[in-house]
Image 1 (cartoon, rainbow, N blue to C red):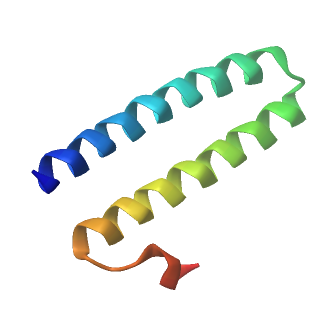
Image 2: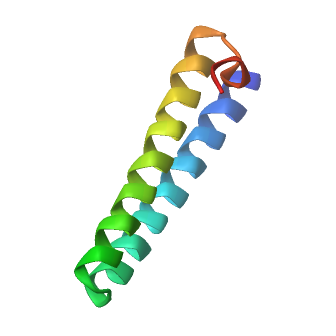
Length: 67
């Protein structure tokens, strides 16, 4: 049961991440070039943090240790 809840939570995080990425793309397309680059950099940093958290969760390591 716990495994299914974790999988459902990860699926939800993926869905939200995709929606955020779409919003970032839309905002970046309407921004000036320097603003667009800053927006993509922030989105990339968020994506990396989420991936690190997922890897830590998979390996049983607390992501808080890494930050």
